[in-house]
Image (cartoon, rainbow, N blue to C red; front, side, top):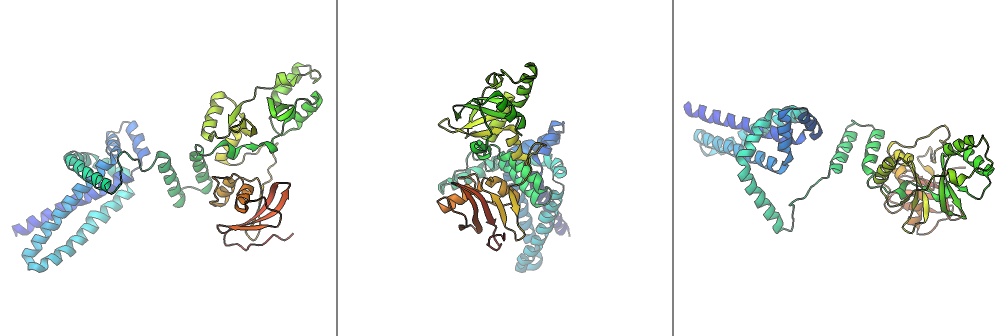
Length: 427
């Protein structure tokens, strides 16, 4: 009877320890680092302990796995010895079945289910116990780590000093998971993703191309310049002389009105070059994150984009960068007509200069925007020529039909997504 109580008590204790190890591993890996960090900053000592433990994840997981395997193997060995004494060699089978059920239910599923439901609460509770385990097993864990790294190095794999996920990748993964589980609506996910993309997107991808930029000829009369400034929907207009590439200043509508007021309400004799601000040129390869920082530091909202040869390529504004995050921003002077028309059959008619990024974000497509910026550029890259109206192309399940072309510019395209009938819209 004493022997039965000893074996039963020892196995029961080891199962509890195994469950504690399993639950601790799940809780410490599933807990929110940002939430734990806020709690630690607020003076919670156990949260600070959890933060230190998870800071060395490899050592933490190694110590917990070592302890978990140790108690599981010991519990299985005791159960086998006990059942063999009771049932002979058949006891091995009984011990295997019994320990499999006990370990699976009470040492794995049950504690991990609780831990995943209450990760922060359990992580705070088990932190002192885990700290003791890490302290006791650290020499053995270091030896195991050395053996693992040496073995992997023999196969040409070197993991020393590698970071598997960057902070941006971890945040992006969390956003994707929350959106998949319904915790984020699509608009919110797009905004958060766009913030993370600011460092990867360059000005050439979002700038207003030079052909769409409204500019002022410095040789025009003062009346013509003033009329253009007042009638323009834009607040800032580049001022050029001799040729449009020679930009000599930026006309700000408010400065013009102020100058007119100081000139007794008349534009006669007004020198718009004196009113113009000095142009600010930035390279087209500047990332949106860098340009946003420059806009904030320079307290400016407008810049001229140039290529590597210094040629004028277009303009970019603070609003352009903000629109990459929140979507199109319209005011009372903007035209809010969309460049994208969705047909009843699922086809999409869009202008050729519509950015691929906008289409991908709106329709959850994955059209490659690394080489080209607009949908017209994408189709031209597929066709390897400037296509004519009526020409059709298929690529990666998408159908593309050229509807309109003006000179060398594709101005209207019918896009047929995968699974839709590929035919032109009826006129």
